[in-house]
Image (cartoon, rainbow, N blue to C red; front, top):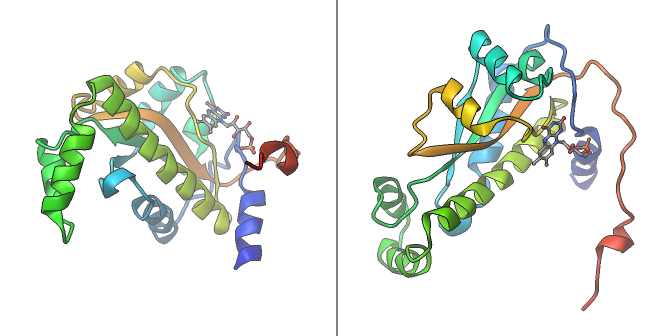
Length: 201
Ligand SMILES: Cc1cc2nc3c(=O)[nH]c(=O)nc-3n(C[C@H](O)[C@H](O)[C@H](O)COP(=O)(O)O)c2cc1C
């Protein structure tokens, strides 16, 4: 299991070009999305939402505002990882989330006192941070079954949200993840030595 995980970590890389003749099976896609769904999130509020972009014209339009990155149109699946903006305790989405817990009253109280005093900007930032965890898990899960990915922040977010036609009072899209199969060999990794990343206190 440990070796399998390590293999997946080494297999995963930021894939720049996908084989556009190869499709991810529905079962494999579900496996990847499940890794997102089962990810940890602050207060367990599942701040994410996943938009699967299959419309060809929409993909081309997004590529045009994303540095013309070919991953966007060559990948089998393109997932826009969104965060929720309605994360105050009074919002219907959060009210519904509270009900999933066995101890909703204590949680509601803690959440209200801890989250609600923050500005909209701070809460957006907090919410968006959660979805990066889901994105990371989805990419590693994909790698574990031989599927490539590439996190993409290089796009005009406002334009992409407009092209997607999403309600921006509810969602923001900080990054995209194309999933598919590589056509090029993986480049050598540039990583610091582990010892340089650790400080003992
Ligand atoms: C949040 C985030 C945004 C990124 N945006 C892009 C992007 O727009 N285009 C791209 O080709 N790579 C993008 N990358 C990939 C990084 O450049 C890549 O992960 C890094 O160079 C390390 O390479 P590796 O993932 O192959 O190990 C992004 C990575 C992260 C984590």
